Structures are given as structure tokens and as C-alpha cells.
Image (cartoon, rainbow, N blue to C red; front, side):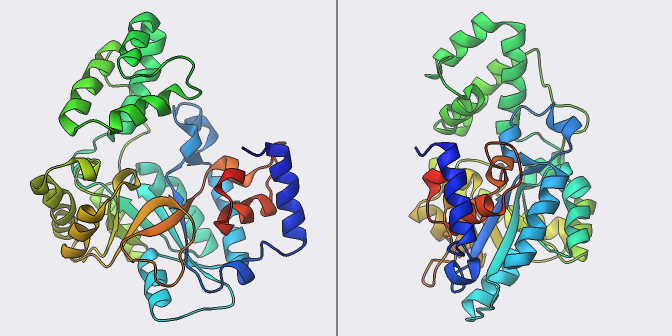
Length: 338
């Protein structure tokens, strides 16, 4: 792993020499960015996984940078233009938001409007229908509470998952361990963890976007896509459940929203040949993974790679915004340096 200060100096030198210019590196490629939560500082302080969030101010800075160097828009629009051979001087970029949480409407929407940018929002059908906390957020909230409430019993619980206090990010390690389980096994462990934490811990400001908010986003030019029915890890589910997660979620969203759903986002980015084939069979036109990189001609439209956007990717070790640092991230070249 390259040291952060070496990375920062290298990024600035490459940027000043124009070697990171997207017009050179990405002119014939499709860049897709990934966001999750957009939270102001007061809510970010309460959220147990701040690494997957940006503030509205950071999002505004990032969108201005995207507009300077790229032609940004929804996945549906940009993927179609890319397939038709459109190669503008400012390379094509699709902007995506995963999970469909309420903060995307409350905080991301006005920033997108201010910058005149449209994006794709991938939502989980069941979570939207019932305002359910997604399972990885349930893990994060419950684990933080359980460690404060009964550290000894919680550490024993974690040891049963192969997670120890030596893990740099205990929440991430716990989520990773639970991802490897079947949905039934995961729910059993998650219920036990929530019991250790004293019950569900989601703060009042958190939750999912409503159907009305999703319709509003669509009416304003944004795209709504499916992130499955329940955010299951798709390679681990049966054929019957796979059909419900993929085709069933598309039908569910179409019925509730009143328009076609053309894009899919694999939960956790996990897919294999069986899952990708099910997405194509269900009638989607595009699907995105979480595999890092940018997309060249010949990339399957059901295996698009993305560059995830986090606060740390936009800042130097000293904490200042860095255009070179972000362009290095968007280059798709050196994931170990980002």
C-alpha cells in the first residue's frame, strides 16, 4: 500500500502535468460514479458508517468538478449514448446513488438541481414499501449500541463471526462476515445482535425515500432503478428467490411508480453468470457492479464497473479538497493509490 503523503504528491504532479486529464484518459470510455449517503455534519456524527457518506458541501464540490471535466447524467442516458458511439470532448459520466435513503431526496436532490445534473437512484423495493432499515445499517446501529451496552458479550458474539477487536473497522468486518451467510442465517444473527444492543437504534432522521419522493425525482429528470427486492446477496439465493429479487422488484417498482425500470444495481455489487443472466432476462438494459474501474468498448452492459465516491477520495491527508486526488480516483488506474 502506497503511503498517503506519497499518493497526494503523486496525484498533484500527475494533475499538473495533465496526465490525469479525463479528456485524454476517458474520452472513449464510460465513467460511472457511486454515492450512498449524503448527510450534513450533525447527522453524519450520528451515523455509524461515515465512510460511505459525503456532506452536501462535498457533493457540491464534486459535482462542480464533474461538470468541469465530464458530461454527467443518468446511467440510462449515458449508457445509451455510449452504446451509440457518442464520444464528446468531455467524457461521458453516469452518476448513481445506491440504497434509496431519505437523505438522497432531502440533501442530494437540491445540490444536483443547483448544479443542473441528473442522476440515477437505485432503490430496494421492500425497504421503500415498508420504510425498512437496510440490513447493513441495522448491523451498524446495533453493533455500536451493543458495544456500549455490553462489550464482553458483544465481543463474544463477534468472535463467533471470526471478528476480533484487532480488526481496523469492526463494523465493516461484521458486515462482511454476515454477507457470506444465507439470508436466514444472517437474519438470525442480526436479531441476536439487536437484542444485545437493546433493540432497533435507527435515529428519527434516518429512513427510506417514499414513493412520492421517487416520483418527484423522476419527474425532474432523474432515473429510478432497482436495487433488488430485499438487498439480498444474489449469488447466495435460490433460483426462485433470484427471480423475485430481480424480475419481482422491477414489477413492484413499475406498479408503484407508473413507469418502466431499465437499470439494475447488484446489492453489494455481487453477481455471477447466473445473476447477470437473470437481470438480462428480466428486461433490464443496464446493470452496475461495485467493481472499481472505468468502462471501455466491449464491456457488458450488465457488468458496468464504477468508481465509488467517499469523502476521503476528495481530500488530501491534510484534509483539503484536491482536484488531482479526485481525478486520480476517477482514472480507474491505481485502486491501491486511492
